[in-house]
Length: 339
Image 1 (cartoon, rainbow, N blue to C red):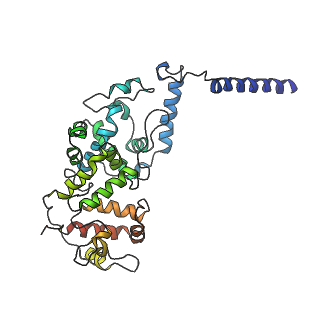
Image 2: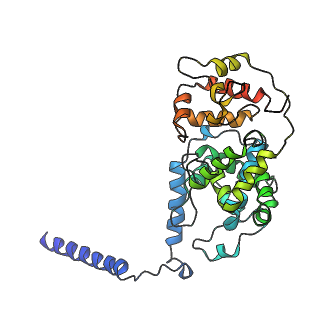
Image 3: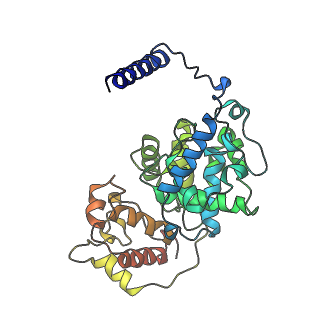
């Protein structure tokens, strides 16, 4: 027994000595050009696959992914956030990615064998020590489904072309870059022409500084030169878009927006429409896209958006039915100048 204890102590001491030598003296070569020791890559990749499988959300939480607007939104983000390392279905990645360890695989190879819920986990969380980042706004896991929707189309060889203006327009025209989503993708992307330039400038500033959370918009705002932001606000506020087709006016939504309830204040008091509305208290909502409004109201209600204490309090008691009614009513209202 005593001899076994001595042998065990020697083994532990040797292990500590080796550990100190590797860590303290820098004996392990961390160079990406040196590659891994035999078997290490297999261990890491197997651990990666099993870790994702264990932690991915349930399959019944996967939403419908065939909405063309959702796919287009994911393609727009993929064009600047993912192409440099993984390339696109038609073009290779940038040259620097070939020298990474592990080397990012081409996108079709990267997503092969992964289910939509597993892809969501990978895009949302990233992968340690691989160069694969997590989602820029961890609180906005809802946005990740847009990228997953695009990746599912890549699997099916049915992906839409990536915005061709993206890489070129960032350098030549920030207006064209932003216009690849705003004005072309309905529903999920907000109308900007119904807001004034001051409001748009403030929102862009909040995306750049991380006050307002959106992985898609924080990425988009980060690649636009800061000096272009005021000009972008002026441009999109002055843009005159064609009025959408009129929608039926829900009576219950009109009542809720104008009168509120014991727990929910009247929305029109801050957001209009109406001559009595003090629109400096909030953005204009009349004519805004229904799907976008529903998403934002849920974010306020669920405590994900917290950049306005008044809205946190106002949305706290909204039910899903209330949110649907308000979004539908505001979407049915003509924006300023639309009659």
